[in-house]
Length: 376
Image (cartoon, rainbow, N blue to C red):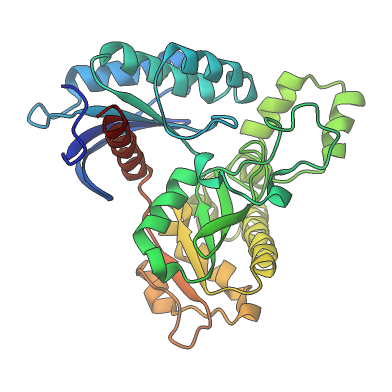
């Protein structure tokens, strides 16, 4: 099926390759509205071969035969400076392959899923959507790195989880208020500050390793630690990457456990208690800094697997942000209500179940329509 016309509804097949799963969806997109028609999550080895196998299994027998689709949308974490949604092409694949070295544990799987789908569904438009694109217009002070920089256009702060943040922004619209903090808390986790709906700062920067404490990633880390490990302990860059990607964060603090739900259950284990406290403290520290940048706070939104489902984590974080007039309704928090702040709270606290694939579907449809209009 060819590109849809400018006023047509478009059905978009979406692929979102993570570190251990492939989320597949089909959405009917009508303007800004993306209606889920099908969703499935497959377990996946985080390798090129694992991603290829998961995509093959999906295309061979994992999709409903009664739902046709007109286009395919893919999530990619990092696109460099040119990160607007783009049609798949050999030139784009070559550019993305150069970025694989920045994330050798996850990027090869995502790129393999993309290549496989593009080969098998070459008759359809394949669109890549990047997690960094949401932060395209960050103020220069938030983009620039304070180092002598040989590649300032490339080597800069970006921000991630943008597909999730875009979904939250589209869902809440004016209800975000003028000064909002969005907290995407999952295995990977970050916070973003929005002023009048536009991002002005994010806790993540050049890579998804920095910012707040995460399941297996350290968040912000004194670069002197890495220099010490390189120079004094003679650790290789490859070993350091594995340390930072897989063996830091909650896993390191707790002695092996990366799942906050399980850590909360181990209330008699001092290391588990320490890991939970460190995580919540890192979120509070970041939220306080972002609120100061915003000049105050109207709204805080929790999303992501942890943000959506772990009421004790939300309660701990909000309780330590009481200086901003934040107060939870604990009954609403316990049932993960849309609004979990008390009526007397000066800050509206919300929970939004994010849907990155819906953002991918909308962006894919928008690019197809704008291209059709230009080529008329």
